[in-house]
Image (tube, rainbow, N blue to C red; front, side, top):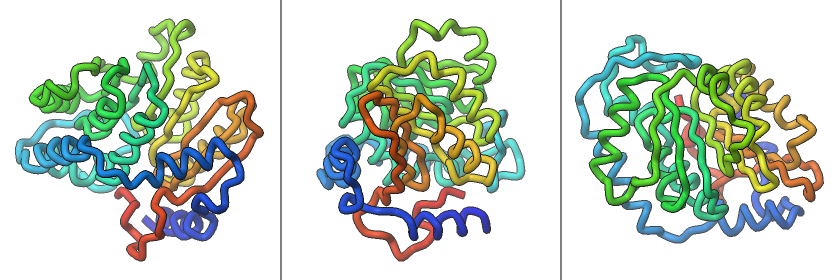
Amino acid sequence: MQHLIKSYLKFLFHSKNEHGVHSPFVFDLVTKCFYDATKYPEYEVLKSYRKSLLENKNTIDVTDFGAGSRVFKSNTREISKIAQTAGITPKNAELLFRIVRYFQPKSILEIGTSLGLATSALSLGNDKAKIITLEGCPNTQKQAQVQLQEQNSNFQNIEFVNTEFSSYFKTLDISPITHHLIYFDGNHSKKATLDYFEALLPTISNDSVWIFDDIHWSADMEEAWEIIKKHPKVSVTIDTFQWGIVFFRAEQEKEHFIINPNKTISSHLFERIRF
């Protein structure tokens, strides 16, 4: 917790809005996507899906392959509590929807389905995209699949894969595959993050967008983020505190931005910190 507070204060000190951005590509992304104030009807679908999870008092036994939880002491967890504490926040779900809507990726890979809160945002952002979402815990994946399919008019473009991530990448011939957008929200450890990064590099194109969740989760995750930023194939990165967004555009000068995803900085220090 102390690490997150220090990191967040540092982020607030260094972050900029659109007025501190001189890259036309990033300026357009910030002004037309990050700060897009349109009340999209899809937001109501996202709210409805979240509500269905928050009202679900059933429990599931969770198999945790990642860095663990700061909240749960037991692997038997109430679905509503998982959605409340471990899922993507409502504001970030809307931002993720807008990012997908803005770039219109044809192929999306999500590493870490959890209860499908981010999955729903990815799907709504482009219902024509092919989405593959990976989840290590079979019970969590089953719950996400059941609840997403209950709203089957909205979520027809999702393929669910129950797998341990590193095993999936080792056995899959990924060299001919291009994932236009990848959302990394699985194992929040330095080694796993860098392993996934290296394993998926053969899938990049000039227009690929990679989003790493919880880059300030720990000192190790911050080290992983610094290594990713310096990789020779990476051209532009954006730190939104919650996410590290990576681009591989060969025509772009290598630049790193720290962008506050909200136009105004909230006075509530913990608003965007996920515990």
